[in-house]
Image 1: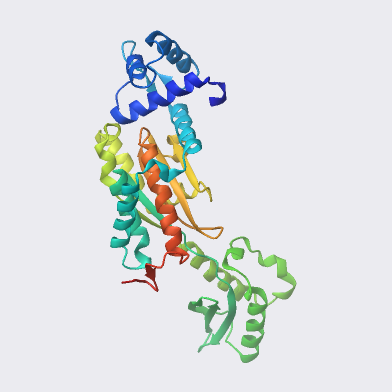
Image 2: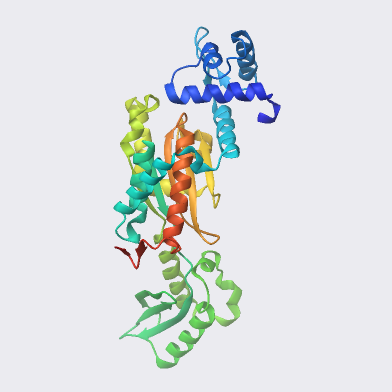
Length: 355
Protein backbone atom coordinates (compact mmCIF):
# COMPACT_ATOMS: atom_id res chain seq x y z
CA UNK A 1 0.00 0.00 0.00
CA UNK A 2 2.90 2.37 0.72
CA UNK A 3 3.72 2.39 -3.01
CA UNK A 4 0.72 4.71 -3.41
CA UNK A 5 2.31 7.32 -1.17
CA UNK A 6 4.25 10.37 -2.28
CA UNK A 7 7.52 11.13 -0.53
CA UNK A 8 5.79 13.87 1.47
CA UNK A 9 3.04 11.55 2.62
CA UNK A 10 5.68 9.04 3.69
CA UNK A 11 7.53 11.68 5.72
CA UNK A 12 4.32 12.83 7.38
CA UNK A 13 3.21 9.28 8.17
CA UNK A 14 6.62 8.38 9.59
CA UNK A 15 6.56 11.54 11.71
CA UNK A 16 3.06 10.79 13.01
CA UNK A 17 4.01 7.25 14.09
CA UNK A 18 7.22 8.55 15.69
CA UNK A 19 5.31 11.11 17.73
CA UNK A 20 2.53 8.71 18.72
CA UNK A 21 5.05 6.10 19.90
CA UNK A 22 6.77 8.66 22.13
CA UNK A 23 3.65 10.34 23.57
CA UNK A 24 0.74 7.91 23.26
CA UNK A 25 -1.45 10.90 22.40
CA UNK A 26 -3.24 11.76 19.12
CA UNK A 27 -0.89 13.76 16.92
CA UNK A 28 -1.80 17.18 15.54
CA UNK A 29 -0.81 18.62 12.19
CA UNK A 30 0.96 21.50 13.94
CA UNK A 31 3.19 19.08 15.88
CA UNK A 32 4.20 17.30 12.69
CA UNK A 33 4.79 20.57 10.86
CA UNK A 34 6.87 22.23 13.58
CA UNK A 35 8.99 19.20 14.52
CA UNK A 36 9.45 17.37 11.21
CA UNK A 37 8.41 19.48 8.21
CA UNK A 38 8.99 23.17 9.00
CA UNK A 39 9.26 23.95 5.29
CA UNK A 40 5.63 22.84 4.72
CA UNK A 41 2.53 24.75 5.88
CA UNK A 42 0.16 23.32 8.52
CA UNK A 43 -2.66 23.48 5.98
CA UNK A 44 -0.69 21.22 3.62
CA UNK A 45 0.03 18.77 6.44
CA UNK A 46 -3.68 18.71 7.34
CA UNK A 47 -4.57 17.97 3.73
CA UNK A 48 -2.05 15.13 3.57
CA UNK A 49 -3.36 13.70 6.86
CA UNK A 50 -6.88 13.65 5.43
CA UNK A 51 -5.58 11.73 2.42
CA UNK A 52 -3.75 9.25 4.66
CA UNK A 53 -6.92 8.76 6.67
CA UNK A 54 -8.87 8.01 3.48
CA UNK A 55 -6.21 5.44 2.54
CA UNK A 56 -6.66 3.62 5.87
CA UNK A 57 -3.32 4.47 7.49
CA UNK A 58 -4.60 6.67 10.31
CA UNK A 59 -7.80 7.67 12.07
CA UNK A 60 -9.14 10.59 14.08
CA UNK A 61 -10.67 9.40 17.38
CA UNK A 62 -12.68 12.63 17.77
CA UNK A 63 -13.35 15.51 15.40
CA UNK A 64 -11.35 17.92 17.53
CA UNK A 65 -8.49 15.48 18.22
CA UNK A 66 -5.35 14.71 16.31
CA UNK A 67 -4.73 11.45 14.43
CA UNK A 68 -3.52 8.06 15.60
CA UNK A 69 -1.83 5.36 13.49
CA UNK A 70 -3.59 2.17 12.42
CA UNK A 71 -2.02 -1.21 11.72
CA UNK A 72 -1.09 -0.22 8.14
CA UNK A 73 0.81 2.80 9.47
CA UNK A 74 2.84 0.69 11.89
CA UNK A 75 3.68 -1.76 9.11
CA UNK A 76 4.81 1.08 6.87
CA UNK A 77 6.91 2.45 9.74
CA UNK A 78 8.60 -0.89 10.43
CA UNK A 79 9.31 -1.41 6.71
CA UNK A 80 10.87 2.04 6.50
CA UNK A 81 13.08 1.28 9.52
CA UNK A 82 14.19 -2.05 8.06
CA UNK A 83 15.05 -0.54 4.67
CA UNK A 84 16.85 2.54 6.04
CA UNK A 85 19.11 0.97 8.66
CA UNK A 86 20.69 -2.29 9.72
CA UNK A 87 19.14 -3.04 13.09
CA UNK A 88 21.93 -2.21 15.47
CA UNK A 89 22.37 1.21 13.83
CA UNK A 90 19.53 2.42 16.07
CA UNK A 91 21.74 1.79 19.14
CA UNK A 92 24.65 3.95 20.17
CA UNK A 93 28.07 2.36 20.60
CA UNK A 94 27.68 2.83 24.34
CA UNK A 95 24.27 1.09 24.40
CA UNK A 96 25.71 -1.79 22.39
CA UNK A 97 28.62 -2.16 24.78
CA UNK A 98 26.37 -2.07 27.87
CA UNK A 99 23.95 -4.66 26.49
CA UNK A 100 26.72 -7.09 25.51
CA UNK A 101 28.56 -6.66 28.83
CA UNK A 102 25.40 -7.26 30.86
CA UNK A 103 24.59 -10.35 28.82
CA UNK A 104 27.97 -11.99 29.43
CA UNK A 105 27.99 -11.03 33.12
CA UNK A 106 24.67 -12.86 33.56
CA UNK A 107 25.69 -15.85 31.45
CA UNK A 108 27.52 -18.46 33.51
CA UNK A 109 26.64 -21.51 31.41
CA UNK A 110 25.48 -21.85 27.82
CA UNK A 111 22.43 -23.72 29.16
CA UNK A 112 21.33 -20.45 30.79
CA UNK A 113 21.60 -18.40 27.61
CA UNK A 114 17.87 -18.03 26.95
CA UNK A 115 17.13 -16.83 30.47
CA UNK A 116 20.02 -14.36 30.41
CA UNK A 117 19.08 -13.06 26.97
CA UNK A 118 15.41 -12.63 27.85
CA UNK A 119 16.34 -10.63 30.97
CA UNK A 120 18.72 -8.34 29.06
CA UNK A 121 16.21 -7.75 26.24
CA UNK A 122 13.43 -6.92 28.69
CA UNK A 123 15.66 -4.52 30.63
CA UNK A 124 16.96 -2.82 27.48
CA UNK A 125 13.53 -2.32 25.86
CA UNK A 126 11.26 -2.10 28.94
CA UNK A 127 8.85 -4.57 27.33
CA UNK A 128 7.92 -8.18 27.98
CA UNK A 129 10.55 -10.37 26.33
CA UNK A 130 10.88 -14.03 25.45
CA UNK A 131 13.41 -16.54 24.22
CA UNK A 132 12.58 -19.84 22.59
CA UNK A 133 15.03 -22.73 22.46
CA UNK A 134 14.06 -25.12 19.72
CA UNK A 135 13.91 -28.74 20.80
CA UNK A 136 16.30 -30.64 18.57
CA UNK A 137 14.71 -33.64 16.86
CA UNK A 138 17.75 -34.14 14.67
CA UNK A 139 18.26 -37.56 16.22
CA UNK A 140 18.95 -40.73 14.29
CA UNK A 141 17.92 -44.15 15.55
CA UNK A 142 20.87 -46.52 15.53
CA UNK A 143 19.41 -49.69 17.02
CA UNK A 144 16.24 -51.07 18.59
CA UNK A 145 16.74 -53.93 21.06
CA UNK A 146 14.07 -56.23 22.39
CA UNK A 147 14.98 -57.80 25.75
CA UNK A 148 12.63 -60.59 26.92
CA UNK A 149 11.27 -60.67 30.47
CA UNK A 150 9.24 -63.32 32.24
CA UNK A 151 5.73 -64.04 31.02
CA UNK A 152 4.44 -61.90 28.20
CA UNK A 153 6.66 -58.87 28.71
CA UNK A 154 9.71 -57.42 27.07
CA UNK A 155 11.80 -54.26 27.35
CA UNK A 156 12.30 -52.09 24.29
CA UNK A 157 15.65 -50.27 24.20
CA UNK A 158 16.00 -47.54 21.60
CA UNK A 159 19.57 -46.39 20.99
CA UNK A 160 20.27 -43.22 19.00
CA UNK A 161 23.32 -41.25 17.88
CA UNK A 162 22.68 -39.05 20.95
CA UNK A 163 22.50 -41.97 23.39
CA UNK A 164 19.66 -43.99 24.92
CA UNK A 165 16.28 -42.55 23.98
CA UNK A 166 13.87 -45.00 25.63
CA UNK A 167 13.86 -47.96 27.99
CA UNK A 168 10.28 -49.15 28.26
CA UNK A 169 8.54 -52.40 29.24
CA UNK A 170 5.75 -53.52 26.92
CA UNK A 171 3.16 -56.31 26.94
CA UNK A 172 3.15 -58.95 24.23
CA UNK A 173 0.27 -61.12 23.09
CA UNK A 174 2.13 -64.42 23.64
CA UNK A 175 4.89 -65.75 25.85
CA UNK A 176 8.20 -64.45 24.56
CA UNK A 177 10.20 -67.10 22.77
CA UNK A 178 13.74 -66.85 21.51
CA UNK A 179 12.88 -67.13 17.84
CA UNK A 180 10.18 -64.42 18.19
CA UNK A 181 12.63 -62.04 19.87
CA UNK A 182 15.21 -62.58 17.13
CA UNK A 183 12.71 -62.11 14.31
CA UNK A 184 11.06 -59.09 15.96
CA UNK A 185 14.44 -57.43 16.64
CA UNK A 186 15.52 -57.96 13.03
CA UNK A 187 12.31 -56.39 11.73
CA UNK A 188 12.38 -53.51 14.24
CA UNK A 189 15.87 -52.55 13.11
CA UNK A 190 14.96 -52.94 9.46
CA UNK A 191 12.02 -50.54 9.97
CA UNK A 192 13.50 -47.97 12.38
CA UNK A 193 17.32 -48.07 12.32
CA UNK A 194 18.80 -45.18 10.33
CA UNK A 195 15.62 -43.11 10.48
CA UNK A 196 15.51 -39.59 11.86
CA UNK A 197 12.87 -38.91 14.54
CA UNK A 198 11.37 -36.20 12.36
CA UNK A 199 10.55 -38.82 9.72
CA UNK A 200 8.28 -40.69 12.12
CA UNK A 201 5.68 -37.95 12.53
CA UNK A 202 3.86 -39.06 9.38
CA UNK A 203 5.30 -42.56 9.16
CA UNK A 204 2.80 -45.18 7.95
CA UNK A 205 3.41 -48.83 8.82
CA UNK A 206 1.26 -49.89 5.87
CA UNK A 207 4.24 -49.02 3.65
CA UNK A 208 5.89 -52.24 4.88
CA UNK A 209 2.71 -54.25 5.39
CA UNK A 210 4.02 -57.31 3.57
CA UNK A 211 6.79 -57.77 6.14
CA UNK A 212 4.97 -57.08 9.42
CA UNK A 213 2.69 -60.10 9.62
CA UNK A 214 2.71 -61.30 13.21
CA UNK A 215 4.68 -58.31 14.47
CA UNK A 216 2.27 -55.41 13.99
CA UNK A 217 1.55 -55.00 17.72
CA UNK A 218 5.17 -54.60 18.66
CA UNK A 219 5.85 -52.25 15.72
CA UNK A 220 2.91 -50.12 16.84
CA UNK A 221 4.27 -50.09 20.40
CA UNK A 222 7.71 -48.88 19.29
CA UNK A 223 6.23 -46.26 16.96
CA UNK A 224 4.05 -44.99 19.81
CA UNK A 225 7.07 -44.75 22.14
CA UNK A 226 8.90 -42.67 19.54
CA UNK A 227 5.93 -40.38 18.86
CA UNK A 228 5.38 -39.76 22.58
CA UNK A 229 9.03 -38.78 22.89
CA UNK A 230 8.76 -36.31 20.00
CA UNK A 231 5.52 -34.75 21.27
CA UNK A 232 6.81 -34.37 24.83
CA UNK A 233 10.02 -32.59 23.78
CA UNK A 234 8.55 -29.19 22.87
CA UNK A 235 10.33 -25.90 22.46
CA UNK A 236 11.40 -24.25 25.72
CA UNK A 237 9.95 -20.76 26.24
CA UNK A 238 11.44 -18.28 28.73
CA UNK A 239 9.48 -15.07 29.48
CA UNK A 240 10.86 -12.04 31.33
CA UNK A 241 9.20 -8.79 32.37
CA UNK A 242 5.66 -10.14 32.08
CA UNK A 243 4.23 -7.30 34.16
CA UNK A 244 5.95 -4.56 32.14
CA UNK A 245 3.18 -4.72 29.55
CA UNK A 246 0.80 -3.51 32.26
CA UNK A 247 2.73 -0.22 32.53
CA UNK A 248 1.27 0.87 29.20
CA UNK A 249 -2.20 2.46 29.05
CA UNK A 250 -3.32 0.05 26.32
CA UNK A 251 -3.33 -2.70 28.97
CA UNK A 252 -4.38 -0.73 32.02
CA UNK A 253 -7.82 -2.33 32.43
CA UNK A 254 -8.22 -5.48 34.53
CA UNK A 255 -9.82 -7.36 31.64
CA UNK A 256 -7.02 -6.54 29.20
CA UNK A 257 -4.37 -7.37 31.80
CA UNK A 258 -5.92 -10.78 32.49
CA UNK A 259 -6.20 -11.51 28.78
CA UNK A 260 -2.54 -10.70 28.16
CA UNK A 261 -1.23 -12.58 31.20
CA UNK A 262 -3.29 -15.67 30.35
CA UNK A 263 -1.54 -15.84 26.97
CA UNK A 264 2.04 -15.46 28.17
CA UNK A 265 1.55 -17.81 31.13
CA UNK A 266 0.55 -20.63 28.77
CA UNK A 267 3.93 -21.78 27.45
CA UNK A 268 2.36 -24.09 24.85
CA UNK A 269 0.31 -21.20 23.44
CA UNK A 270 3.38 -18.99 23.42
CA UNK A 271 5.43 -21.62 21.60
CA UNK A 272 2.67 -21.94 19.01
CA UNK A 273 2.34 -18.18 18.52
CA UNK A 274 6.09 -17.78 18.17
CA UNK A 275 6.50 -20.69 15.77
CA UNK A 276 4.11 -19.23 13.20
CA UNK A 277 6.78 -17.11 11.54
CA UNK A 278 8.87 -20.12 10.56
CA UNK A 279 12.54 -19.36 9.95
CA UNK A 280 12.16 -15.64 9.10
CA UNK A 281 15.19 -13.89 10.55
CA UNK A 282 13.26 -10.81 11.69
CA UNK A 283 9.49 -11.00 12.01
CA UNK A 284 7.15 -8.16 13.03
CA UNK A 285 3.51 -9.10 13.61
CA UNK A 286 1.06 -6.39 14.58
CA UNK A 287 -2.48 -6.85 15.90
CA UNK A 288 -4.64 -9.81 16.83
CA UNK A 289 -5.08 -10.99 13.23
CA UNK A 290 -1.31 -11.45 12.91
CA UNK A 291 -0.32 -12.73 16.34
CA UNK A 292 -3.47 -13.69 18.27
CA UNK A 293 -3.03 -11.03 20.99
CA UNK A 294 -5.26 -7.96 20.92
CA UNK A 295 -3.65 -4.48 20.47
CA UNK A 296 -0.22 -6.05 20.66
CA UNK A 297 2.90 -6.34 18.51
CA UNK A 298 5.38 -9.21 18.54
CA UNK A 299 8.87 -8.73 17.13
CA UNK A 300 10.95 -11.89 16.78
CA UNK A 301 14.56 -12.46 15.72
CA UNK A 302 15.79 -15.95 14.86
CA UNK A 303 19.36 -16.87 15.76
CA UNK A 304 21.13 -19.51 13.74
CA UNK A 305 24.04 -21.88 13.53
CA UNK A 306 24.85 -22.00 9.85
CA UNK A 307 21.50 -22.06 8.09
CA UNK A 308 19.62 -23.78 10.92
CA UNK A 309 17.40 -21.80 13.28
CA UNK A 310 18.25 -22.96 16.80
CA UNK A 311 16.19 -20.45 18.74
CA UNK A 312 14.35 -17.15 18.78
CA UNK A 313 14.38 -14.04 20.89
CA UNK A 314 11.76 -11.35 20.88
CA UNK A 315 9.58 -8.72 22.44
CA UNK A 316 5.86 -8.45 23.11
CA UNK A 317 4.59 -4.92 23.54
CA UNK A 318 1.83 -2.49 22.61
CA UNK A 319 1.28 -1.69 18.94
CA UNK A 320 2.97 1.66 19.53
CA UNK A 321 6.17 0.05 20.84
CA UNK A 322 9.51 1.70 20.12
CA UNK A 323 10.27 -0.42 17.04
CA UNK A 324 13.62 1.27 16.37
CA UNK A 325 14.93 0.39 19.82
CA UNK A 326 13.42 -3.10 19.83
CA UNK A 327 14.77 -4.06 16.40
CA UNK A 328 18.21 -2.70 17.32
CA UNK A 329 18.35 -4.70 20.57
CA UNK A 330 17.12 -7.90 18.92
CA UNK A 331 19.55 -7.63 16.01
CA UNK A 332 22.40 -7.21 18.49
CA UNK A 333 21.28 -10.13 20.67
CA UNK A 334 20.69 -12.33 17.62
CA UNK A 335 24.30 -11.89 16.51
CA UNK A 336 25.62 -12.30 20.05
CA UNK A 337 23.66 -15.49 20.75
CA UNK A 338 24.55 -17.02 17.38
CA UNK A 339 28.23 -16.38 18.09
CA UNK A 340 27.95 -18.09 21.49
CA UNK A 341 26.10 -21.13 20.14
CA UNK A 342 28.38 -21.74 17.15
CA UNK A 343 31.54 -21.14 19.21
CA UNK A 344 32.66 -17.96 17.42
CA UNK A 345 32.57 -16.10 20.73
CA UNK A 346 34.68 -18.18 23.13
CA UNK A 347 33.73 -16.39 26.35
CA UNK A 348 31.49 -19.38 27.13
CA UNK A 349 32.96 -22.83 26.47
CA UNK A 350 32.00 -26.31 27.66
CA UNK A 351 29.15 -24.86 29.71
CA UNK A 352 31.40 -22.51 31.77
CA UNK A 353 32.51 -18.90 31.54
CA UNK A 354 36.12 -18.33 30.55
CA UNK A 355 38.23 -16.22 32.89
